[in-house]
Image (cartoon, rainbow over all chains, first blue to last red; front, side, top):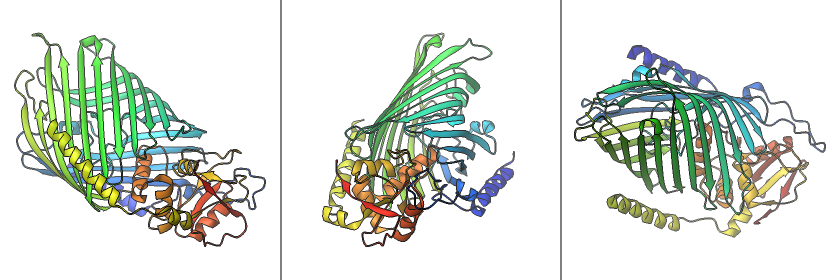
Length: 380
Length: 153
């Protein structure tokens, strides 16, 4: 689809958002719960109040100094945008339908060929029962700190969540999940979730002989996530495991495993977050280790300084012996919050490694590039 | 890596200094600045800080008698809400707003409804059997709403 049509879809969607009542704070009110002593019988909640609408938008300008990366080129591009609309409909206090559609564009990234103008990213039914909730349909994968919110510009300190941990193509599962919140004990709270189903993986990855388009179905996909909230507000640690099976035309069925450990300390004026991820494909003797640490401090009321370091190591066998490939990304930025729901960001990164939009032979030395992104984000 | 740790340590020290310098409501201010109200039909006689936090983060959905818990907030600019949020969550209103953004965009839940005045909160609680809110202590309550004392345990 042409760029003009892409913008038309964006404007159409945004116009739709503007025309509808923004009911972010007016979710369906509870109905009568059967208190016999109640003084009044509440009126049934109007249908219009059962709808809740949320959304986010990020528009960016980006440029890379030497090597094209994540769609950025040497000439600079303004066609970076993320736009999503979430609609919830509450059947009653415990049951609801949730759907989210998204439009995005990543400059000149080869990933664009996988991206429809409007993608249905979530569509599920959710039921709450006591400390549990269950979802059925196309559900977000719960993995680490940013998996579900990776594209929400007002929630991530940089334009995008760390690539080391939040790769393309691992966002949702067609299946079911269960979520549990344990009662607090001495200020500690445990939240756990488990998901199972099938998922799609679409990405452009460097192989031995060139960049490869990967478009696969993981037909058995299991995800488990645990979060432990400490008695200190804003401090939590988490663990995640993700096991999935894939099969292609040229390879037999094989199992992939990843584990993630997360630590998150978020206070009013400061945050420090770190995650470590380890994965392997035993069939092929491939393994990957990645981690990042990021932090930020609000030095003035609207102004936050941010910093991030990412590291990724791929280890895999080749005809001439095992090969290790290391990539690093260091970034620093400034976030100016006009309002909690409106952010301006400027960031600069130094990326060294092999994962670029043009092929870098894995046996050659790593390449480096500097890239910078300025972005505007809003959400409601 | 050492450079990164030094930068983060510097940020931590700076933020800690600023957090310590922030003025927080005194305990006298807190106890005088809001009261927690529930529907008169609710059998509870008192409520703990910990339970209030769980309720206003929507981590509990039922009262002990099975009724649906329906918290209601004051608007984000309300000084009463600022004191309540600091006292119960030990966080700022903006910080709790970020928490709710995360809940929304992870598809889990939406925040409690917000009311623009204490009178609207009282009306909501009166009309909602499982309703719970907080208002300025001088707010007229009328029938159908009662104050529940807060305890620390």
